[in-house]
Length: 180
Image 1: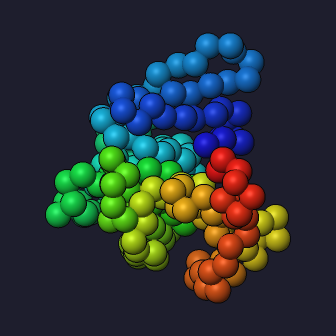
Image 2: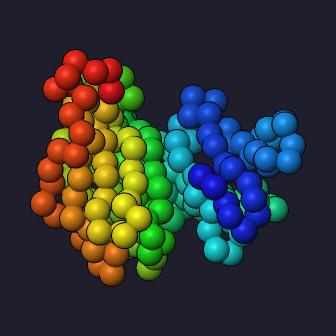
């Protein structure tokens, strides 16, 4: 996740539970935090902290003190093999993140959105490997990938409400036997 204010790219090592920072002016990546196994995505917050997902929830990380604070109640604890995977902020600042079966055996994952008021909403269910979120330049379409489907889904998207509707296939890699 790119922090335009600081000019830093944040990225994670999911299995090692590490958050890295990379500055284009420095060839070395720096480990800036070790929140724990299954640290799966990270986004900068306006107040300088980071928002991130761990196996069963959303968290905030103060970069100076390294204090980790839960933003949600624990999620999907009835699915111990599930964990969060990819996540991004939409143009309005909502934090979208999806879960998956860590072994990718079953469609037990979901896509969630954490609103700016910290209310959490489940948006999609029956996901195998939640991945690849993005929005069109005009903010009218949200793109989403459930990796094993080999498809990029598109939804009509409302930047004012965060609502998605009218799911359709934008790209079907399997159609022409392309690796997705």
